[in-house]
Image 1 (cartoon, helix red, strand yellow):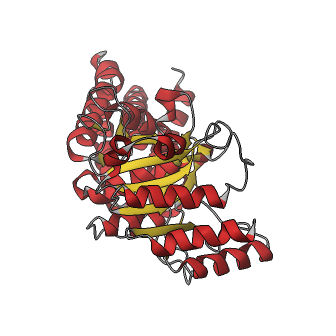
Image 2: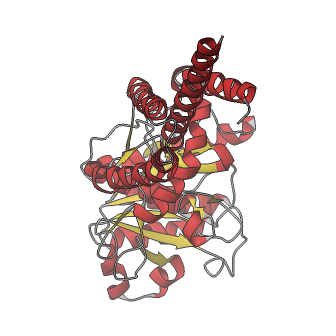
Length: 374
């Protein structure tokens, strides 16, 4: 490497390393770049259950359900029958992941209100909070309709990150009419005391036996089926919502495996499942812990580059071995401790440290020899 380029490389790498230490504190959006690598980790290393989740079930409304009905809004007479059927099946809690923005037929609107009010199961309604882009009349109707049914309502808590990928549940909106999320209220009905802390969603991969992650029953099968179909919902937390090819589908880390979007209904089920099993909660390093990690890796990399600047082994240790070691540590921590490391930033800190140490040592040696000659 030409001497001038070596100097520029060394000083530039050191400056970049120092700047990297301030990224978590002053530019948290840069840290989100690391989520693209975290998505691969999530897609391949998340937990699996032996079979369907034992406490949750989905009743989905799809195109076949609505073959005799308008597609939107969902017929509220049909919804009333679905709610009554789930309640008669002995469900513990029913969550309606369905929004109500305008009136339909008065008799059908009232039938749904009556079905919800008369249900023995605890019922949680979904709602868009103040962050939702609603017309004034839509917000007014939502408030009035939820007031009529007289059941608890929670905000639907999907949160988009870079690339429009849902990785986290949303925090409550300050001063909102809906201070708790839809998922939190459902989990609380199942005995959970977990707050809406905005953590990464603890996704579940498809079960070992090849079944669906959550027991899923099309609404038309529930309505037309016998007692054996309904019996599968007994004592479960049942989420009701749409499953349509082009509506309410979102990119998630699991999309790397499926190549498809995940329904909002399923995403809420994953959030509820995580709240019911707090031992699966995903943790990320605090700003302070991230800074310490980057300092340590950068310093060790600098030391390695400084001491082994002339040897060929520095290439192997500084690049190949370091990448493999960080990958292994990162995978083990996620798989067994559910900890997400800032892998990309950590690897970058190491590489910058090695490059800075090696380049600056070579520059220093060259300058020392030049002085000896003169």
